[in-house]
Length: 445
Image 1 (cartoon, helix red, strand yellow):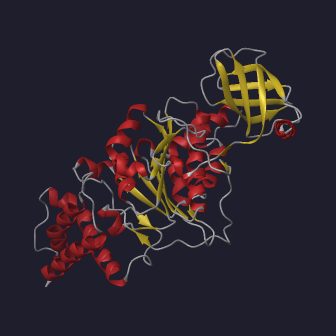
Image 2: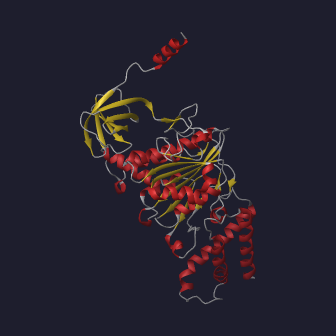
Image 3: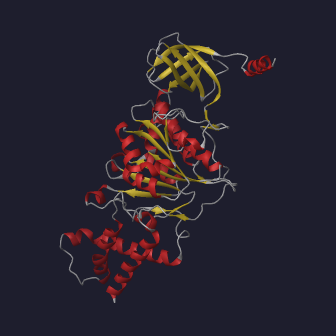
């Protein structure tokens, strides 16, 4: 009798109907499905039953009763008339603390060969709105990153969102790995969006290491995966960060890169017939960027926070290209990494004079701010005269301020140089920088 009642409850919980349609056309990355009029909604999940297995897809557009879908994997074996099953409800995850130390894809499936992921008791929506602006907490106190250039000149605070703007091959990924290992946090959620496949294991094993991986979840969508999966991986990264934030934890969310998320959204928009706008980016790209990035930041009072570090791959080293310009206006600061500094061998190649943290000056005390501003003046003076000094056209003694900069600026640059294993200490770094600033002042006297 108990078995019969249990079976009856199971049957009663099943949906009364399961809707399905059929594939009518495939146009590049776009799959058209008919027969789901009035049932399919934007963002709904559809499984297309092919001889090669189920192809998970998502409804990205609706036109004249036809559901326009894009697949999460290559649609091998797809043909006209193939059955497409509609899933009720939006995509969601069931994360738990057992996911720490694991690698997952954009749909929350394990990709590290370590077995199935333990499922949590509640569902976490993959795409969720940020906390209400009038109710969320304020940005918290300064946290150490272990990177001297950032701790001294572009400090990071709990719940702040900072952008790392760089061209290709200037040390952006190495800087990200340093931040992943050293930044103070309880949990790190790392999204590798559109990364080269060979670099994933290198990042996890060499850069992150066992200690860093133990407190992290790595979300991976490599460059060869469909645009929908790359976009989904970015949303999943924020969804996992929100889950741990709601547990009251300090979450560090790293995403490399926002640019590849924007490129994936551009592909989806163009496939759905959106008109290309600035440099081919569709209007939805600039609508989705704030929806994604605003999810990071402080939570509601009593919750934890998401401290976000988002890399932006600037096209052709143009820091004013559309995605970089849009992201810079959304985030709470930007760190500019330049090829010119990297070429002369100073890593991380952060341009301190072009980098800004919008939590300054309140996140540093009065003495630290005085030291920082004095050092920036020295570096600014040296930057103005650098080419003249290198050409030998400047005569020492002509300008006392320039003399001080020529004597001290190279030593500040040397202090800021770090390798992957050289972790900085903020208090010691401020003490060392203050000593150099006082030396410059004594030099003036």
